[in-house]
Image (tube, rainbow, N blue to C red):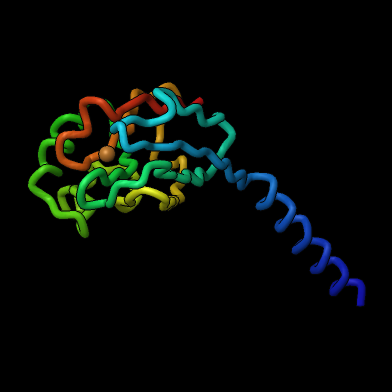
Length: 150
Ligand SMILES: [Cu+2]
């Protein structure tokens, strides 16, 4: 009996430690028919272990005409990935397929829709230089911002 209680207490301690370590942080950003994001900067606290990002499209235009997505890369990779994405397709999220430079991304949505993506902050370095953008062809120059982690 004693050893069973000790085992249960040990299991609870492990569960408590795991829960304390895993911190999910929710962030959200809007996009519009005017080809804009609602913010130029997204801050993720350094103790977040996971990020849940929600992208909303508050406009009315269809995804084929004014589609938006949210793509995260290192800032050095942002333009090359955006340019490569222009040769992509709507179903492929206008991104090169299986490209390790794409750290996280949502699908492309149209007006009135929302989507989200979850990713681990283990892919980020504190204080690193990260850019988020929309890879719909022609949007990346206007629709971009910085993601700050740390
Ligand atoms: Cu867009």
